[in-house]
Amino acid sequence: MELHVKREHSSPGEQHPNRARMLISCPDGPGIVAAVSRFLFDHGANIVQSDQYTMDPSGGMFFMRIEFDLPKLEQRMEQLQAEFGAIADQFEMNWQMFNVSHKKRLAIFVSKEDHCLVELLWQWQAGDLDADIALVVSNHADMKEYVESFGIPYYHIPVTADTKAEAERRQLKVVGEDIDVIILARYMQIISPSFIERYKNRVINIHHSFLPAFIGGNPYAQAYRRGVKIIGATAHYVTEELDGGPIIEQDVQRVSHGDDVGELKRIGRTIERVVLARAVKWHIEDRILVHQNKTVVFN
Image (cartoon, rainbow, N blue to C red):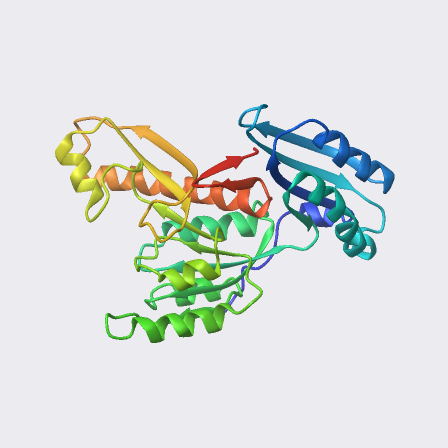
């Protein structure tokens, strides 16, 4: 079988092997940007991009994303993180630092609808998703041959009401400890609170409507009966509240009275695949900060 594993473009990590990113959130106040910039300057780093946002300069939260180049980053990363701790403590920061050359590892969960999975695989193959797709998990065997043609392992783990706990145990075993984000690409099973907590803010779902409208079964039939003029999709992090997690991205498209349920589904699938791919791309590029039940997305 031919394996479609050739990547068409080099990744940012390959182009910039000494590049790192930082995500910072903390109470707002004077001197934050200056302190971070001075720290990086003192260590010989060159800032190549910096974005910041404040909810309120007086008593609000401050958010920052910064990219920088630092010679011999791989050898110096651990020391850099350790020394930044003093500044983080001073400003009460929640922060993360990432080496861009270390690609994030993705696990994709899918059921029978394949459009979102196919979009992610296509963007990965084209080099638009700078990550490693480590595996695909499904409660159906339908996509096994297609996924394996990309050289990606496919795990068929059936789920029934009686086997749900055992199925989740098997899922956790194949996912392992080194997965950075799990993508529910139209995976039509509810995952448990313990699973969600284990991967907090690292499980991305695509919802087949513009939340909070039309929650539940047959959303496009609901939309058709209501005679809606727009339909959409929502990508969000998964929390214990069903379809209530922090929203990453949404999009809509106008429809008309002449569109039947089938046409609404076709349009909806296109929106879903685009919205989910955007959300995944922003996550793996470290563009998202979660605060309470909202996101700040630097794009």
